[in-house]
Amino acid sequence: MYKEEVKEFTKVEHRFIPESDRWVYIEYKDNVIIGLNWMQGYDYELFKKEWCYTNPGLTQFYQYQKGVGKVDSFYRELDQIIWTYFVALTEYDQHGDGRKPN
Image 1 (cartoon, one colour):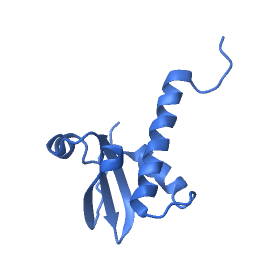
Image 2 (spheres, helix red, strand yellow):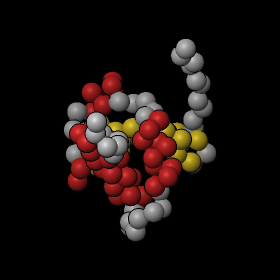
Image 3 (spheres, helix red, strand yellow):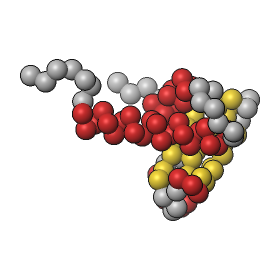
Image 4 (cartoon, one colour):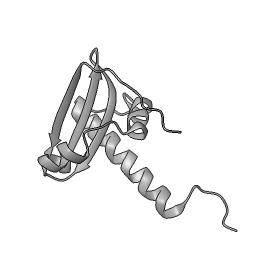
């Protein structure tokens, strides 16, 4: 059964990363990231309408990956983490979970 979760946050940021042609949605609570999502492309109105909510998988992946790489800025690190997450999902979709085929 679906359980509605109420989440408190203190700040929301919409950031465009032009190098990757991507909008990023960031939720903060007390200056700590508690939610992330992204949309590929420039259309800010579409982004606001369809992508401004927390993606739990990306948010958890970010928590595992932050600080791992040597990156000179927060937004560049965030962008790299999103790319890695996207590629991992794409590869999994194309190749499965690694178990031996029947």
